[in-house]
Image 1 (cartoon, rainbow over the protein chains, first blue to last red):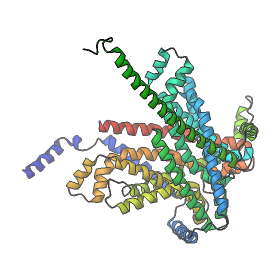
Image 2 (cartoon, rainbow over the protein chains, first blue to last red):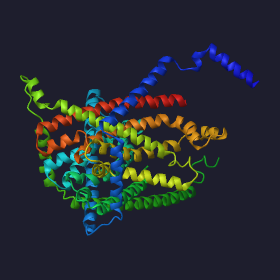
Image 3 (tube, each protein chain N blue to C red):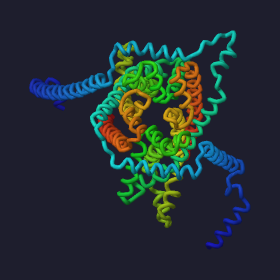
Length: 276
Length: 304
């Protein structure tokens, strides 16, 4: 029985080989994709000069650094670090709020169901996307040059980087609203503004709030490094400690960042769970 | 039958109804006031946080109103004057370093690519022990989760600062920083995908006598692969953007050139590099989005 089945399968394989093997074109395509991928990987490794010697040397140096970091100690700068951390949180909070306030009208403008002109819609969306292409740190560099060193530049950098992304997310939330309340308000004689205020807004508010909270979390993370280019916060202290080879204090600051981020995440997760 | 006649038990019924209405109204008012009190409390908390942040970050309206035009002038000032008559000459003067910048841009993309690949491999190794449904030993699960958390919470740039110290200046340190951070965030996403797979194929492989690696390879990976690929592409987009900033701490890519241009007030260079960067990231975004939609669409058809 078993042997017969095997023989049967062998016979079928001979007579209908195209069922048992994928078409040649498909196999060729897959193989060439893998080949390109592997070639690209090797080329990249060659470009960045990833020789085993270098890796070994670097790893031993890295091990040395880790040994130097233990134990993490605040030294005499503990209160300075706390203040810098507060500054970081303040930058993230204020930057997020400003971005959100600007993003609300942008979101309504960018929503297909509010402004039905597709050329306008397309242009605005591409504009949103273009802003997203610039990293927060680059914004910080620009604002430090424009308004000077300090946390104010950091606030502006966070707001500038986020408002377009939030605007896009808000626009998507607005496009996904349930039509029925909107029609209800219109049917009972509401003007356009009433429709937006009573039909759309109550539906999108929780979604928007949850996006804003998420952005606040991510901004706390990114605000910790803005100081490296002089935009205030804990990043300045950290890069200074690394520059002067004070690894114990650097490790302490990294731990502070980890703890702060964990606390903020926990709080914002609880708020988000209540919102939705 | 008696209820159908409105006049039958009129006064008594309406009195009872009135009582019920009053209690209902009372409860409604009470709940409303409780809600209002909570809202006021949260509002006060929010306001306090707002005021505290304003104080701590020396944010004030006058400096905002003087700062915004300054920032705007700065951005406008970076653009060169192009005249229609000498458009070609102006453009070539604006993009005088195009060949050099393209090389750095290529380096940035390659850094994002190889960082994503290396980070993805590490994430793939860590995501199975970090999925609750795939490991029985809670110790391993806990350790893997904490490791991933550590890798993704330490900012990429901090890793870059440290790696520049250990591995020397240049893109190698940047790639490692990207890879480490990517491993943390992708590992978590992969683990979430793993936790949502259908358990039946896993049981099937186990019942057929597969050991743990076989279960992962044959029971989990085929289901999760489209989602892995989609997250990898998303991460690639993010990493190209991230790689463009790493140059600021000396970890390779176009960031270095941008940093120099901003520091030395080479205004037209700033806008030239920024536009190149925006164009590149936009193109990569569009390509990745198209592939991602195809992947996930494919997945949906496969499931249906």
